[in-house]
Picture (cartoon, helix red, strand yellow):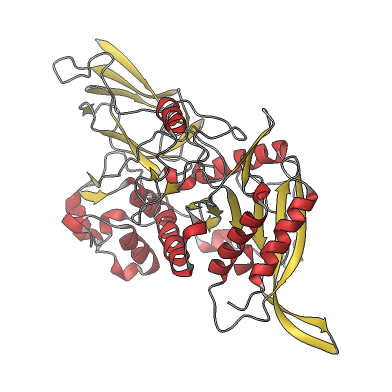
Length: 471
């Protein structure tokens, strides 16, 4: 009997761990080489991990929701040599080159990167840089991250809809159904070949009447690994009251005496976000300037985000020092001739920062179309790792929710982030009296190691001047 221990590989994110979403097998099952073994969630995506051998499953690392450390045991097999096996040294399809840490220089920093309209593979538009291209091909590094840096391969993996329990769906859709508490076996599939789509799951979560009857889904079978339904406590058992059973006022205890809540393990995007924020806090010297953009001269209704992007581009051209990367270890600065803006996107899973490529070449319609595509890809977790990498400056439009001024976090290797606050109407002193103007609070946080206060102030002035233009 030949035993094989399969350790969790680097899934292309350069992260120390991943979360089990769903096992496609159970202990004792026989699996073939390259059949899907488990669905894992990383900081960016939900991906399927194939079996490295053919044989019987002896042991699995944990259950859905458990975190497995990269390089630690994921599954143990009893290999069946009568079934197809991968030859020693044969290509497994997992190519993950060495990465670099936050704050180090990304390969080919001067390459202009162009994103396809479908958000697929991206190609370098500047072919006249063989040295950068060779470095990229050799090291296969990527500075991308949800909110920082992570190492990935140079190919985008496409997810395939896998039939499990008679239901066809990609891993990200299954994970979403699990989070929303939707029985995916009862969701009506509208995708091609009977595939359950992300929208199908969201529609079912919003309207339970869209679910198929339980009887209609039973013919699909129940996955062997499905956990038995838990009996939830009744509403009466959990009901709080201000009085005791004797009718006297209920006396509470200090929070430290009895903890009614349970600690929640951070996973996926939030887990990576916590690491990157801590790293940024430890490695950046942040300084923030704030001011108000006067929008009184604007003519008609305008796309605020598109105007912000245009103004950032104008400021980057005026003061290139903030459209740059900084290596705190080597004390080197890389100025970029192009402007790729990282747009912060808030989700229930955590913070994503997709890159708006070539913002300096897009008009308002191009900006809006690109942002819409990126948001859609973030929401359904189909965004490629390459779209989360290599931005040269960041934007957080937090004012669409609430808040005027902020101190946004600068994530290396970038040196600056712009925060746009909530639009407001302020009383402004003008020659001969006062007027009410619509204004937008702007916060500029920058790494003071990489640029001076004067550079930051001139950058902010250029941004405010452009925003003040009528159109």
